[in-house]
Amino acid sequence: MKKLLLLSTGGTIASVASNAGLVPKETGEELIKMLGKLPYDIHVKDILQLDSSNIQPEEWKFIAQNIYKYRNDYDGIVVSHGTDTMAYTASMLSFMLKNINIPVVLTGSQVPINVVLSDAHDNLRLAFAAAATCPPDIYLVFHNKVMLGCRSVKVRTTNFDAFESVNVPPVATVSSDGLVFNTDDHFQKKHDGEPVLNTKINSHVSLVKLFPGFDPNLLFAMVDSGCRGIVIEAYGLGGMNFIRRNMVAAIGKLIRRGIPVVASSQCLYERSDLTKYEVGREALLEGAISACDMTSESAITKLMWALGQGMDVHEIDDFFNTNVAGEVTLK
Ligand code: ASP
Image 1 (cartoon, rainbow, N blue to C red):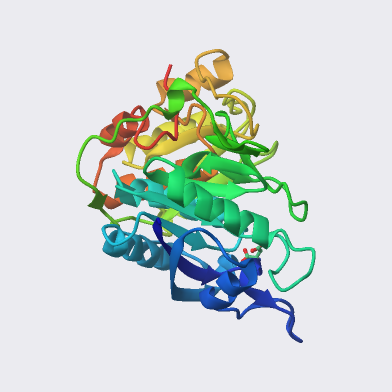
Image 2: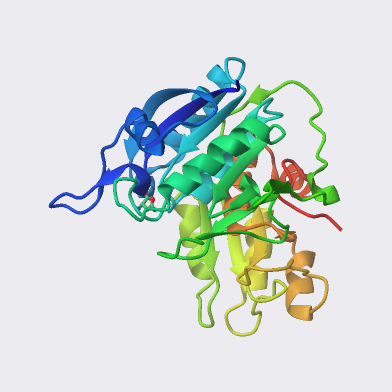
């Protein structure tokens, strides 16, 4: 029988109604009790009790440390987590826990587990099944899908089908035959070494969504206030305005000041390609780094991790041209 660990951190899945609204209160034991019998030897540790809107870099480190600590004692680890920031946590864990030697599966629910028609039971059952059968990696499971953590995004606020695997198919889906694995080459990732826990990050970064009329001087104001790297969600393939409000010139100045600027797309699907239009190519010439087909969640956490390692702009450029955890498809 597979020995699995549940690390509970709170979220809607563990929430109960209160005068202040839904508050995470249920323990991991209570979650397991409500699932009924499963064919696994499940152990539980309550490590946090937070709505995931309150989960921040300090909690990412703590969760990563716990996973690393228990990685040799269990066949797989499930992390119950609020849905709001789960994709950020999953992405950051993918960088903090390189070569993790067991499956680590994050899940949550849209409705608390103590509500009759909650989606929590199905999501948790799938999380345990994935933790018992998937190859080692960081996953997020939700609504019959097992997704690579660093490719998942929350796309719906209330629907049970709240997460999507962006730009790569889910690793596995549930059918009447059980878990059906995708045989795509993308998932033939080779783990090339011992697990490494590296929680050094610099969270003084910014994620800016470009809109017509955005004042590029605000980027300098951010840097003057301590911001050390910026991801810009630009238009379409990665285009940015350079007439009147000159984003391109601002990016060049920032990069010459040693501030990495990553250009991603406001479009959820498909890759940014700064080479196609003048509005992208100019930014590329100034040194903007392309996020290719990464999610914004992966781009911002990758940038924090890279800065935490003390990488300079050129090293960060190289690092973004490296597929670390399956987060990017390089051409
Ligand atoms: N606000 C909740 C949280 O992220 C939402 C959820 O879990 O679905 O913790």
